[in-house]
Length: 124
Image (tube, rainbow, N blue to C red; front, side, top):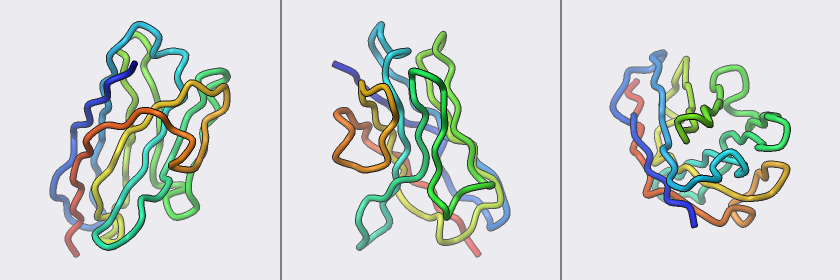
């Protein structure tokens, strides 16, 4: 069982930056692949970024590639999402997710555990 708590969301102007954090409970965090997803009003939840526990490989949605960076600190049981050059279309609730697979997935159905989400609003 893994419990996830996101933080770091807020209101930022276009072009600004935010860093989201996701703190995980449990002693086996290092063996969970982690993902970030987002959901805008009226839209389906979509993949943003993920990091595999086995080799640290990272994956990004095309829409955020070059602007967002996912990383993890296993000693702190925390995964981060550094977001730069934010755009109004990045406005959404951002969710952290965990899965025990060797390779991080890029779809919602591949993740077993979810946080409650943190709101990110980018003003134009």
